Image 1 (cartoon, rainbow, N blue to C red):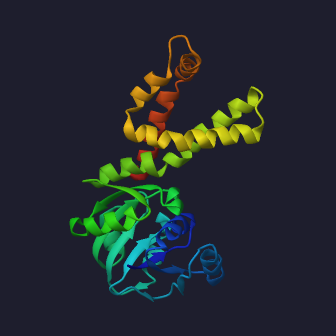
Image 2: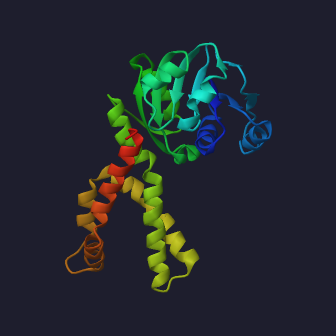
Image 3: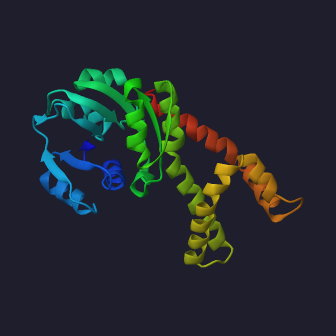
Length: 251
């Protein structure tokens, strides 16, 4: 597909790195120097264009600007797109329709793992574009089509914000290893291997079953798990999702 990515930010770069192998990309932004820096980080050549009455007639757009910049950006897009895919958190379909002319609108919430084609992307919007959306974002990882914008906002809190939450877990585990005497590089390598091995585990078994299989009576895991419960780790993560969802839905 020919795809225009509007907004050369971090999420846009992650998407471009994941999409460039299978799609022809054009990157649109305000700053020519920033666009050059952006495309220099890609493996393949991507076309660039400056905003300023940019012609979008019949194009497939992935909108990656900051939510607060939507109106300003939309004012510089001329014509009517075929489809707008928006990764703007907290920006509903109705607001997109008021801002940018298009035949179809789909909201998408990928994460930074898109750069390695390992994103978990939630999608919702025009049912007529469901197959295309799942194929497009399926090229950068896994997808989940949800039935409502409320569900997409919840998914944003789980899978969109999730890499930051898991990064906190990874950093804390490594810090714990260092605290007890491991070299930093060794602790980091152990955590990297742990996360790599956990992906197939959780895809084949429920988290509670994994825990039960690892935790033997009176063992090391039981002691550590008890410390996590004392620190209300489970409740903290549930609250983290709730807080993130509140922001995602715009409240």
